[in-house]
Image (cartoon, rainbow, N blue to C red; front, side):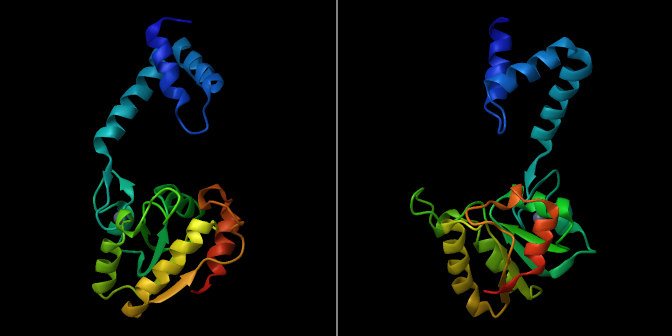
Length: 197
Ligand SMILES: [Zn+2]
């Protein structure tokens, strides 16, 4: 339509979540109409973010520092660790300001269908954090999917010998639902309504 460079741009944009070819074309056009004001700032923000991004060795969050700003924050309650499937869930809980402890990102859930086993999940560093002795409660904030439930049961069994309290988020997480699409109020209710696992 507008030459190979623009087709390439639209192709890349169309692969982003929430975008399809139609919205990619609209976004590209909007940027191309104001290359200096819209496009170059976006391009340099992308480069800066790509260079700066690190995975926190303690919790698995994405941040420009390692340990991440949450793990490094001395005002947070280090005795409560909320286990989530992905960084998107962590960011959703942070946005909702419902958890004042630390997090742990599993990086997925057990899934026979997708061939994801215990060795594929970020669990070893969770056990190491618990072994350090500061953690008293682990909240399992996994999606209400079959895989989420399987993972929660497996983690509960795995953590039992450590002696920490293991709880699961309660009402509000819809069956089959992922955490990061919930509104803040529902997330808060789910966390408040947690019960022993
Ligand atoms: Zn961290």
